[in-house]
Length: 306
Image (cartoon, rainbow, N blue to C red; front, side, top):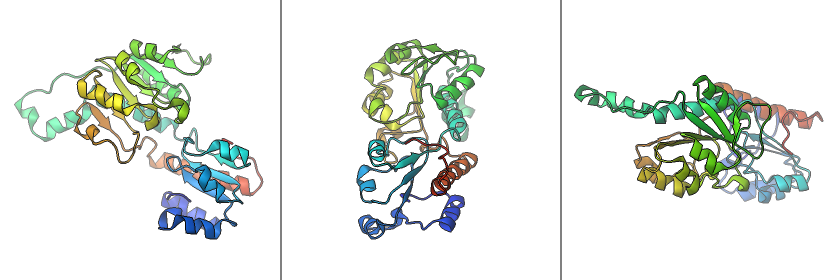
């Protein structure tokens, strides 16, 4: 295991497998070397992944089971080439991540954190808080209409938002407007919610041109991966007011994020916790364990990536 899981998962895993806890040892290479001929599985988390270098040290490795939907930190090409199976935990976290996407949008637009402080610090006694931004009925652009993007759209429709999206291709099964140019989508939108997968193909896809097109009335929400947004451009846009605000659950260098974010009043920050409910985390851990059990009993994997 590359990192800990909640206690309810650890107990079950330790009852069924010999678990080597990589994060608890100072000499990781020594632990790997001493057990390399016996280790058949890696249990990891989305942000920890499994590099080619790690997998290459484990000649008996058969499967990497990931606690999380994102697999950009797992070297999938190496896994395919070497016949190593990879699983993740899709679907079970979709609804909670979508909830946070809408929650962050409301928090930024309606300035919910600032309103809380306004009451607590006594400012309300001196006068009413300045006006904020409406969410209902606005133009929403979704960057990546996969599982989470579609769930966001469903929620936004209940707010009577006009919904358009950017993706690799048009989805004929959904009624929203496809825009094949990301800058144009930003230009048409007041709110932009990023739900893309991470990886090299989407790195810094939200760049200065996209943010400029979003404009001074624009709000961006990122619940995908920190790599999808050019943080230098985003910080410049927030600091200069060339966009109205941002709601961020993910960052480029998390958890050691750029300290400039901490000084900005037009951004709401989350500690990569969109799927962090008891219900979802239990379902994620169960899916990891079910995939491992299926593999070692010769059954079909439940959520195979490779």
